[in-house]
Image 1 (spheres, helix red, strand yellow):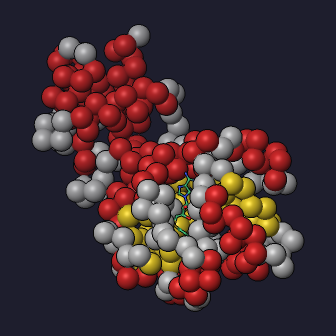
Image 2 (cartoon, helix red, strand yellow):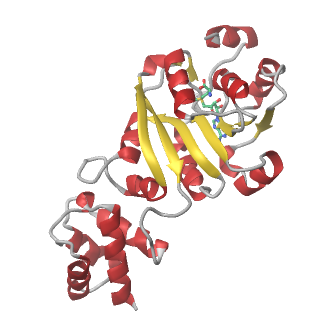
Image 3 (cartoon, helix red, strand yellow):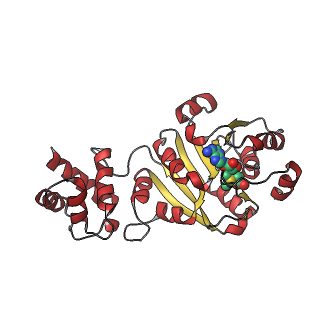
Length: 279
Ligand code: SAM
């Protein structure tokens, strides 16, 4: 990979503020491309193309690539590197400010895939943006901090299981594709990374009567990590101990368990029962 040569040629100094850690190792790049299962008909949004190593491979494989880069200094570099491709649109934008519905209308014909080596300072808002735009996005293959990848993919009972795991797994199949060491980047970041794939679903994995209440219950339950579900719900939801006991009983959940042991299905049952006490 010619990341170093491109940096020298264009006099690029990576910006810390923009989370610029450019890939210099081909193995994780190939893993990302493989995980994205690209077909000639695919349309792809790349967030943070940087020096274009992933962008060029996406252009070779997909029907259309829209690459959104915040750093104006990188746009001329990317224009030059991708000039032989007609299927790329480079946008100098902040991904967090993008209206995804508008992007879809203006640049894509149908649902698209997201492939990105994310700048780590915006990992969480980007993941939430992907999940909230699941009606437009069929799959996301993203490089994130290892800890975030573990939280996204965590199963109940593991120490990494929490609100992020539930938010992701409610609407997506999550696969941890591979771990990536810091030496795969220039400059190397302070943390290790991992590639994760989210395959977005149209609806939640379990029917929800009231999504806002579901997340209120999840947040309340995880609000006080060392407490039992029963005590966390009492202190955070403003319900009486009796109402909480009743709802737990009807949902078939032992109130002395801790939040990190409850499955999404159990949280959904609990939210359904709690809604009855709120009526
Ligand atoms: N894709 C390249 C690679 O794999 O070598 C670069 C990845 S680097 C970790 C993250 C990239 O995201 C940088 O090019 C950075 O300038 C860009 N970036 C940072 N904040 C952004 C934002 N808010 N919107 C779009 N791009 C952003």
